[in-house]
Length: 307
Length: 295
Ligand SMILES: Nc1nc2c(ncn2[C@@H]2O[C@H](COP(=O)(O)OP(=O)(O)OP(=O)(O)O)[C@@H](O)[C@H]2O)c(=O)[nH]1
Ligand SMILES: Nc1nc2c(ncn2[C@@H]2O[C@H](COP(=O)(O)OP(=O)(O)OP(=O)(O)O)[C@@H](O)[C@H]2O)c(=O)[nH]1
Ligand SMILES: [Mg+2]
Ligand SMILES: [Mg+2]
Image (cartoon, rainbow over all chains, first blue to last red; front, side, top):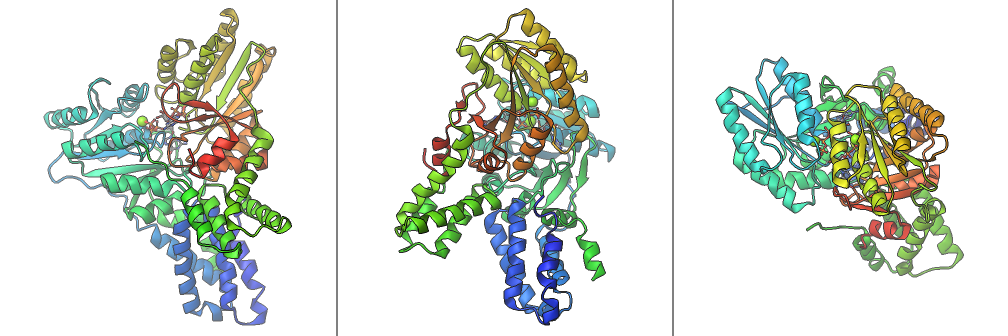
């Protein structure tokens, strides 16, 4: 990939100047251009990139980077720190209701990974000693219910369904009753994929929300998403209120700049990272790893340590 | 109702706010293209080209810029996509549909089957995704909707065996087109990509007389990774066309311009919704117009 070596590039750009003594503001600007391109190439949203660059520039110019013998490393360090900070701290905790059941609702665009991730969460919760219930709230996609049933079977968690002729709002209400009756302490509601601009379907989500008052509304985002990630996140957050984000398909080779975009727009924690199709492939989200990944510098920390 | 928000407004504001064409204007154009997912390299090339042309033709009016830009983008696409339609002649034909997870392969197959059936062709579907939960059920529902046969095996069975059976069924039933679904696979998974090679071999051995089309499905919401997807899939199997899905959203799918430029694979079809009819032939002019927010 083009930007595999951002760290190296920065090193080169700036180390050329070492012999000349001090690094100027102009040199920093040059370095910032490299960073900017890398972020754009990683699909971080344009506006987010701009804000970020300004912030880093300010810090770089205001600090002793310009005096440093290793300005490249210093700048990488700042970039990495700022990026990690933007990505949030580790908060892979789910909010549990003081009075069960805890209600979790999965939302997002078509094909993002909601159904699969519901299964993964159910498995994880079960391991923690909970008694989850999966709820088949997607009545539109062909065989969506069957898919959830197969997934539920694989993780040995019951699946609540009323078929595809009852409205998702009614299904959600009935599921809550069912959970109460059967002692399910967590309820995971799978919903149909929808476009953020589809008003009718967004309203459906709002109606489900007011009917069952979920404790966690999790936005499932495909990590390969491009510049549009901000629109998606903004719409879902504005219209529904999102409590957390799950990034999927990180087992691919995408840089995953969407993570930064979504985070910057919603300011909500990215709680989990999904790294595969199997139902074990769910991990807590690591902001620092994501920062390095977006920048295409897996070895960034070792580089800095050498400095 | 769905609201569309393109870059037209931005461009119009932009040209209005400039009296002359200068570097600042180019910089803003750059932003606009990046925001449509064209990527850094393609954007730079397009802008450089625009800059040259403006200089050469001594253009000074900022109002000209939009048309020039549209021209350039359409010409990149036209070079490979112009008039490219689904290659299913002569019969029999086999259509292999591949791509990463969740992009819209199975749905597109339903739509393509519907389209071909309407043209009077006999279509058979093969459920080559034996991995994902209820993938075959999903294809079966599409088959029922459209009214075509679906060949399927049990979950977990060998996909190559399903394709083999699909070919035998297509022959026996004298189908014009056999469309094969495959499991979503990320291009960086070697073993899954090798599986495609195995399917190719079956097709080669069992159905060498068939017209062959291999469609890579890309999600318009995807950013720069789509280039990598196209690159790797093309290396592993002989991709003959792209299907760009989910263009009914706000994502513009501008990355296909980069793909067209770098990899010379034509875009053949676009998906604009979840219904059977929501499939259109690709038209570069219309695509670029949509990129600029014009319906
Ligand atoms: N490689 C990989 N594939 C994943 C991951 N998460 C989900 N998938 C795959 O992505 C595809 C879509 O996943 P689903 O769970 O069906 O997505 P969804 O959001 O429920 O889709 P709709 O209900 O159609 O909107 C499937 O092929 C999944 O196996 C992941 O972390 N990695
Ligand atoms: N809005 C919209 N949604 C689409 C379009 N094409 C497919 N979808 C939806 O995207 C989701 C995934 O579609 P599938 O056809 O299952 O995708 P796939 O590539 O077969 O997925 P896997 O087999 O899991 O890899 C479903 O919810 C589809 O309804 C489209 O053009 N527009
Ligand atoms: Mg689903
Ligand atoms: Mg499929």
